[in-house]
Length: 116
Length: 115
Image (cartoon, rainbow over all chains, first blue to last red):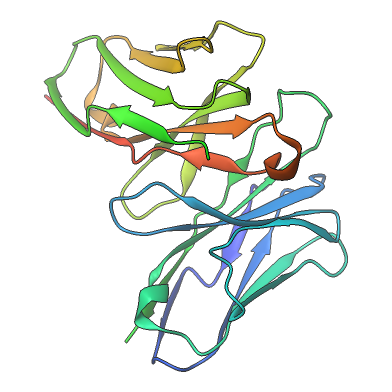
């Protein structure tokens, strides 16, 4: 068990450019989550997948944001036409949907995005 | 919408003190509650998870309690150490079908333990 990994760890881009982040969950986990965290705030939910199906999306996920999990393993989060307000830490988490309330979400190290 | 509040926002204590971090939530129909630790610029480390049917959980020097009816949880840290310095986040998962997957987070308590 190598934990949740994210790539890249840091990304600096210019306003208007597109960026894509990758998340590799813990191998046996069937659920994958994306959150966004700005300075001094707690993480805010963006979206989550069970296997390859995207089951829930937050209103924060505007039409410039898209997430995929094509084979139910890794996931990508793309931001098109980045804006300075997109600058944040993007966190990925995964869990095993056991059907019980003991389901723990495990987080990756995050990708820190800075839009200039 | 579930709202999670953590008090205090910051806490600075000398090494060895026992301390309590507080978390409150507005919707008592929760599925579970997790406490996380976050070091500066890093991801989140899960500390404890309390299921909706449980009253408390313990791991080493950490003890977390849950009172669903009053919408409160506390994280108790015994014999604090400088290595405990971090931001502690409380997160609640609600028991409502349309938002079943997401965690709702507080802003955290920034803890500093000085030698």
